[in-house]
Length: 172
Image (tube, rainbow, N blue to C red):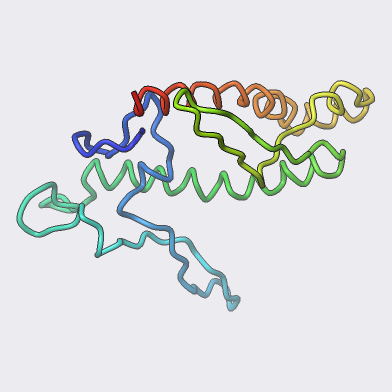
């Protein structure tokens, strides 16, 4: 549905997720010593098996007189967003879990051709529990910046129907 080999990113959607935009680069960690201590610093790794890598055509990663090409800069930016987002996501979900807002959800649907699907192992935010939070809990979520995210997670359920509609278009 969203895979498209005719586009530069290989992704056909209004929004290209950072996990797709970063390709063929990966986040790796390298041991570095700072002031006598050991720390792991994120570094860019490249997937040499990627079909995007070759030596005959395309864009050179490094500029002739030093520096990175725009493609590498954009990929590095995506990798940074992924790394920072992963840290923030762990904190956010811990806050949701502390308030017992996370609940499992089973997604069941039938395509136009009669095929039935049941998707298990998914989670969402309980709208009912969120609505019933006391003022102090709502304030805590709001001050941490996670209240809006909770509402966006709830609202994202509506995207499932869009995906079902796209799938139905493909099977026509």
